[in-house]
Image (tube, rainbow, N blue to C red; front, side, top):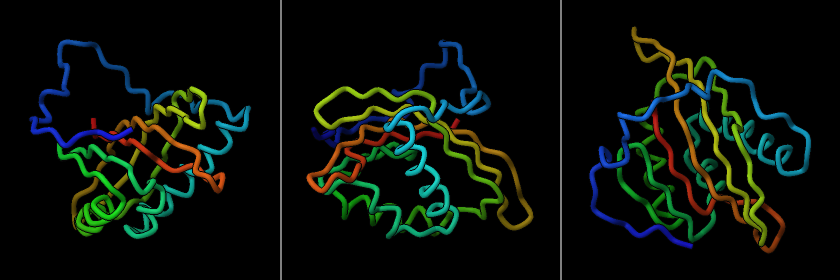
Length: 159
């Protein structure tokens, strides 16, 4: 499965007329099965990796043929393209005083694929500025031959 790099404006993905829910402010999905345990653990590791601005470790979450549709509206395909994007992205990131990535829904669709709907809360500071940011993520994880889960598709956005 691959997302084609299509020219579009990120505004095309906004649906302002639809009501919104701040799922990031709702309770976490309970950890009560293998899939929720595994994805919760991966998200905790991702919190530490992102907070440390470690782009190389962050890129290890992605499969070799992964696609990332980032909040800047561009699609990056392939692990190396994603790693390069993350290096640039991390260079401009603030200090995270708290980062909480949470599972909102997990669907095991079979064939080694998990679909995750996630959200995050970031308490950040950058020089004399600070704030709280919310965001959402849609991820398709694929079980690799060695048993590890890697992201195949990741769509991320900030609220």
